[in-house]
Amino acid sequence: FSPSREVDVNVNFSWTIKKKPSRLKLNVKGEGYNVHDMLQLVMPGESELIKGNPRLVTISSSSDTFLDFGQVLVNDRAVNQFILSNGGDRSFEFKFETGLSPHISANPSLGTVAPGESFNCEVCFCPRVAEMLSNYCVRCIIGNGKKYRMMISGKGHRPRLHFSQSSLNFGSCFVIPK
Image (cartoon, rainbow, N blue to C red):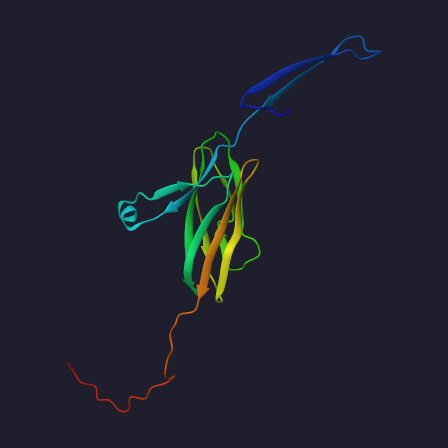
């Protein structure tokens, strides 16, 4: 059974079996359904955040989406937020595959989206060492559905601070009462 559209199917079969007095009748039922998922990237800006109405960009499952985290300080984190929506009448499961890099994570990495509901997810870049990511693949896989590929770029760097001395001695100082 491989339906081409969302319909209920009911088929009756009748077989003649040797050495049986009557025909064997079998009623087969099937239901075709589609997963109606949509993944959107939240593009916050100062004016949208104040209004509480962020700008959303729909992610395509047929082509790669390129995300640039820019320059991120070591042990800091940059976050891209996503909204995963279910426009169908059945729940579906999702899973984020972030690969082997310890600097990329997804929260939550898997879950279930109920019919007519939306689910907030985030992909984080948290470099622990100075590192350059270029077109690192992260995938969001929908159960029995689409696969969204995101190519992530970003650079982890150390702050450019230089201290001329590691300790300073100010000597004796008087405390002045107010």
